[in-house]
Image: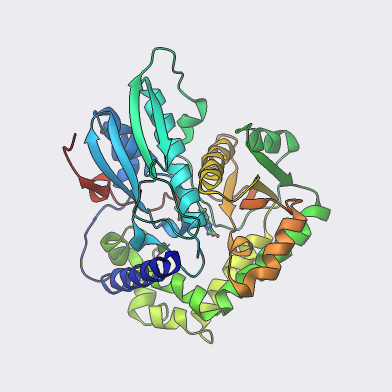
Length: 381
Ligand SMILES: Cc1cc2nc3c(=O)[nH]c(=O)nc-3n(C[C@H](O)[C@H](O)[C@H](O)COP(=O)(O)O)c2cc1C
């Protein structure tokens, strides 16, 4: 029963991805795909304010899987859009759930700055370990609370990024790393900073990237989600943005096209893999998050911890970039998954997030769908 539902979700998700990819060239749906980064603060209704900040959360492949049933200015229900899954690289929706955890932490922080305590009831109708189904992720309620304090990390929400640039050789100091991993004190975290520890992790991250790129079904999942140039990004402000001043031209003259990117013999493919590996190998440090088990609740907790680490790094002027390839659950990656658990001393538990840290050139914010695109119904009581 569960398996057949999972298969159905995969098929549904897969065709949604294809539809999204084929609709890429169909006109400017969202002419300013970064507007949500500027408009969140203008929301006056407390629930919309908290949600408009929450949707700036990091999330795998920028799928933005959240869907919100807005019930009132203080009540809503969060769902996961099954069409936003990434079935080959995230076969059990583990990463998608972590992204929803990031969303819920930002939601809670944004509510607190408005004087509201966010009450979250996770998985009120239960959950499935194999797939996120159509049951709610969380019931959200806001309560005015005179004792609520705003969180200092909230000041970093608009500056936070996932930075995929090559990092400089400058190492963060261990006080900074302790501050980052200590930004959440009830979850197990770790870091590596010495050459002896980071070199094997750099090599592992680069090798895991090679496996994902050279496994056709996992790589093609990314290709379908690539948005090449500003027109495609405006049509679908999600997925993997390939942009820059020359991108429109490179696409026009046929150097960077979806077909070229899909061809492992093309220079576009080779360049893409090389860039990802060079980025991984430039890690100045690594940080990670481990949970005692792999339940949905622990995946949410890992997401809540990850966004706090990302915000703490931002406060310290450090860039951060998750490298999830080795953590993924498919047969070709099994050996890497075991190795990354060994190297982070997390064997027997679940390594949920693994990210590089360092100093890098700044990066612009990633595109987002606006809140209006994520609301599934209005006015119910
Ligand atoms: C669970 C999870 C896994 C992620 N894994 C990767 C990854 O392997 N490689 C990568 O480049 N980005 C990864 N990211 C970062 C997302 O791609 C990024 O959050 C998204 O594109 C939105 O960009 P932003 O964080 O700059 O807002 C991951 C994020 C999350 C929450």
